[in-house]
Length: 214
Image 1 (tube, rainbow, N blue to C red):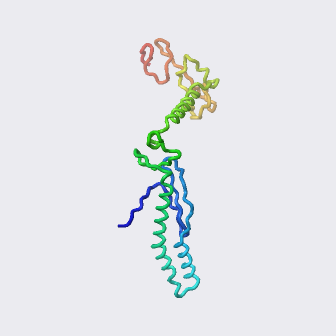
Image 2 (cartoon, rainbow, N blue to C red):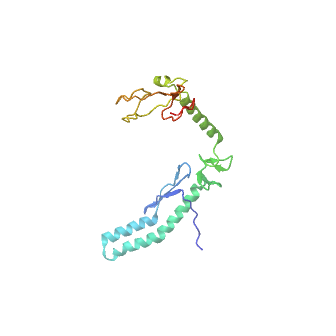
Image 3 (cartoon, helix red, strand yellow):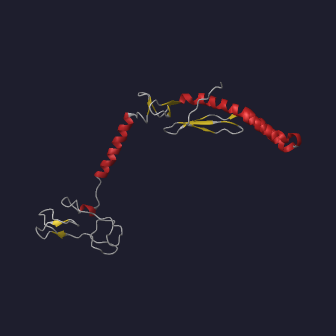
């Protein structure tokens, strides 16, 4: 029975007729290693036979067929040997996670303390630092100084609806304006309850203070 060749999906085959070369990369970060180019003896022979067939003609017209047979037999065997050698050379730099089955690089993506890849078991220090940074950004946005026109809302009416575009001409509004700078449409209209005089929100059907139907 022929010997089976173990392989993984995290590699690229860069081989040509002239020789063999492979790249193996991490499933998580994408970084990896490339084997040094290894010249192919059968590839050289193939090239010689093809050149002979094209230059001399006659008996050597069959050189192309011969070179094809050389490639299909000896070259493929040499390719398998080179692939197996490359696997053995670079396999120590990668490890398979027992949880997600991904092959990751030991250098950056393996958590030695947990015995898992960092996708399954992230470094807590790194995660804490990232969480703190994210929280800091949120606080910056929350406490950022408001523009002068927005400060005019005041604490007593901060729930006032601020339009992003004019309801008439649909022009975008750069500020919390009272009138549209494009068409002059009044943007802030105030309505009051006829019963108790409370200010009403646009579209209200009943007064939220006294229940008067509008």
